[in-house]
Length: 187
Image (cartoon, rainbow, N blue to C red; front, side):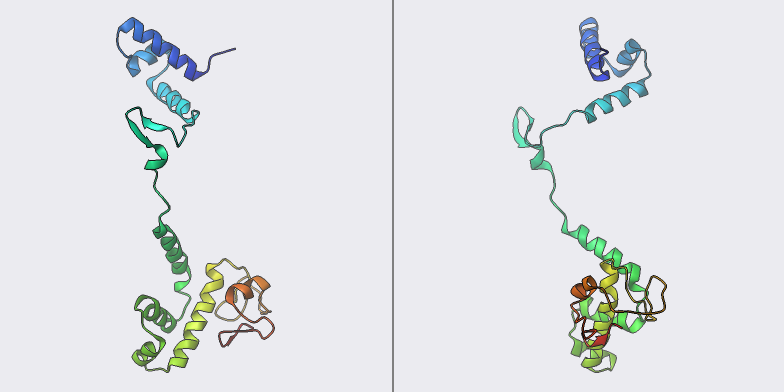
């Protein structure tokens, strides 16, 4: 049975260490094995990939710290970045006024009454526009296939709009029988 590249590397390293009286360099090993230095580096990397290390093993003999102690945790900012990227995909599909209301509400922290006062519209109208914008974005951000586009037709290209799926209704919190969600009609 032929020796693996790792076994051959270790054997040659030990043999050359004895002959040279020092740890052999990469060119020494490559010359003795009859391969290029690049091939030797590739073989060493491949050997490392085939040796799994325990996350609980100490990093060194003098340290009690393990690899698991050094690994980072989940970064909540990653989820925020992914959410913002998904939102940016559909942001331009909203009318300017709805974009402005969403920014004032969620970025500016304003109440609906404050937004209405700033825009010169009633709080109830702000509520409707906010519900419409969120109702438009929610199924798109959740990846639902049967989302009506701004013209009222399905994004799949059909001209007729039917009732939303049970999953869409559950995610949107709508009443499927009445076809309503937050005061506006789904179909």
